[in-house]
Length: 616
Image (cartoon, rainbow, N blue to C red; front, side, top):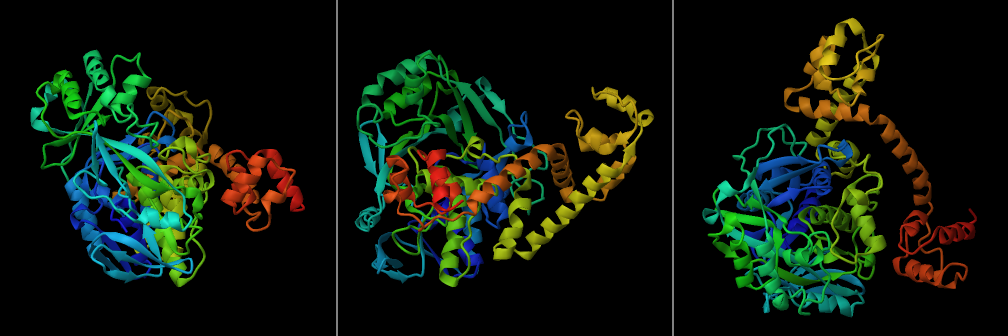
């Protein structure tokens, strides 16, 4: 239910696995709508998109087809921090997704609004729509986004809806509460949309994209289809802040109108001027919405202030002095459900075969939603047709970190993925998502033969390069002149080529220019994937020590992951652990000792006591 990013990935995954799947959406023209900024990826989010693609999902393919700018973020840091990000053409993004969904076998689309879940004997068995149509189902995945009792705020004006000009969904929250599922409210926001014809671009700094081989999908090696566009940057000023402060008494965030939880890491412009009162300026990013539109998204200016305040504040910025807008920014409040009420499969603990994915779980972001949707869709299929639950570990994927955080820790603000949330981020790089996940997806039946064949070939080519480099000897007299030109220390004696690869100043393509045999070895690679495979081999060699160390830690932790405790304890009767531990262990009912240790408030002493009681 719901054709946002979670719903699209969920239905596509279930259909590709063979389930007869129905996608219900209020508006077929808004499938995979980019409700906020027209961009996919970013810090840690880009890794999730690569993982979705490696598993056989579609977000990466759609983004590559519709990209109007691509950048690899965090290049100044190590590869574990590199994160791909792309601006997309919003209209083409919708068209590309709809084209995929309408041509998938087993997948059907129905335009309507779901008003009621059909629940019998603690099990979901279908839905009833606003048109009073009943669809029977073995499993239901709720992907409602911000539509559950959605309420938008522009100053003191309140509008019921799940997105601007779209109605809210009413009734589902109340029904689920009646079945014992706890709900709460969250808040998010979106900035003003600007008419590009009114912008003085000559008074802004241009931010072009990159045009190298990087993309999101491992399946897509073609050149970029669309013309690449620039983003633009400018800054607010003290006059801007003065005008914004005038509007604070009418700000829903500060006059008590909004009571729900908002995102701390993506603050509104009014929150910025209050929290960072000493700052005289804040950076803004003007992002194009597409190739054939003049609509621009103003990243950094999310706001729910009154329309006149937003407009006057923008006009105080030199590049926007003649500004015309399509619509103001607004805040939106919506219902979500405490994700600790879910299993790692994203099935609810209270109602069998009912799954939640996306913002309904307290997350934010297209990427987080898409990753959850894929896992929920796979497990909904498994529940109907049999098989082991499909769960990704924290050492296997950012998606695994995301879901484990949700079901183990819950949320106290809209959850967004960061690299800092992943304790094994050296293992979870954007370059190796296929190596980590495609074989799992192929075994499941989600990744198809052509994808698995590409992985197998890539692995063989990569390993051949590593083997050559580890065994090929080089001599000082042939290399020292070139080494000195690159600013690295010349050789005193001969060595294996791997010793030079490990130097941070040198790359495999640079060394291929110095060592003809390496050049010949790289020339054996398929031309369309040469750079991708070369980069994968180089990262694996340069970071092998860090990777092995992290793998050792994973092996130790996995011993605790294998100690299952679900259903083995009446936690309230264990007087030797703290009251807080008893309460939280009872609420979460963790699957393993390792998961118990990740619950906030559970101490190492509590874990030791559980191990003693298990006889370990």
